[in-house]
Length: 305
Length: 253
Image 1 (spheres, rainbow over the protein chains, first blue to last red):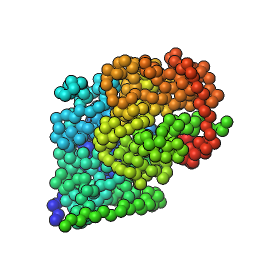
Image 2 (cartoon, chains in turn blue, cyan):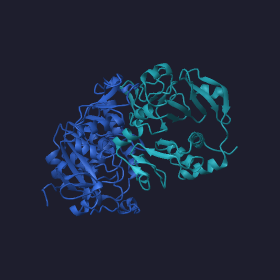
Image 3 (cartoon, rainbow over the protein chains, first blue to last red):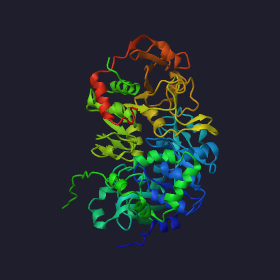
Image 4 (cartoon, each protein chain N blue to C red):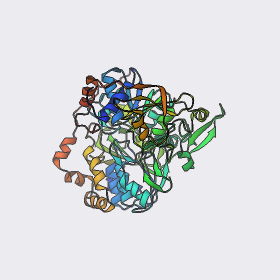
């Protein structure tokens, strides 16, 4: 049964991402919803608090486009390449505008999401001690362990207004199958007040129910379902298309100057209406290069008497 | 002696530190090469774990990021980001963690956050990522880094990931469950840490390198072990193997 959640990216962003809101575009290297980031840029959202463990190229683009007021993060690098130059320009030179930061370690940030998802008041963790990070971030505190009397580091829950989570396949209601690097997909969905689920394929509910262990996100935490093939490019979707490592390296060149970055955004974000047009604009040869060899898992038996 | 480049030598020396059946948290680049080299030589049962959640990876090619899809294809397990840090790292299940950074100081503290001040950075670096968590929880931290004066500093501008902090006595009071820094492997030599004070100490010279050359590239008076050793030269097998792991020399340069 169709619950009316199925919509275009344009409709989902327009409905659920407002100015000054706190946004989590999920994905640890894998399944980063670039198409959602681009749509947020096209709709010229402002004052956003962008949260992601690894801001990656997508937040670099959103920072350059002027969407961001604040960044909540744990690793602001171009994975496997080096710096995120737009992030650095915002911090070092205030260009195009200054950026506030709220910085953690990976465990700290993923712990914040876990605490948000499970409605905990705070989460204790064995890290941060001895580091200079807590002295710069008042959100990283310590409490006395009531059992041993030792001080333990704690982080507060993170409850974004909206998460965008990309998955391989989902039904029209948002029951989602995910495999490969699952990153913080589930935690981001459960921690956020609204969830936009984007998927490579829409499948029958029967396909989902044939393999329930693979459903990391059930429909009742999802508010919008967007069928968006190639949503993650230049990031990847396991089994659908590989990571465009060449683009990750090119990004380092594209972003050497703010003007060059804006030229890229003019062409590839503002210059297209949606993801379908973006993909059509890509050379066919490039698309072909990114298609993976198949590696199927062995089916399992879910039968009962 | 077999000819090899400084990067190849660092990979080979780092690989020798890994033992069979150990679980190692690997990053991309040199650490990944070192772990894969060890697996082909003395440690066929090495468990390679990546902070992206890939566990027991068996990459068919050189991964280009820690979240590369080839780390998933054929892996033993894949878990979520939170589970990786909670079950594996905080759970105390990682023997060796590789770390790098812009600066390392004489107690093995690492800076990957900022050059200059935090509020008004001269150079803003990517930040901790998992580094602080890895440094706090693994049994042995191994740092592989070129031996340069700008990287070796008496005190880091910003302490991202704890080594022995201000020395071993203070470090013990912090009650971190990890074993702290174990080795720093450079293109010039191997440095380990004094059992009592936690101070970085030169323990081995790579072939053709002198103590003076290492001191020239270290801006504080470096402690030298009484029984200073010579790093055994790389073998033909090691050099051939490391080259086959990175045929297009993405990381070997």
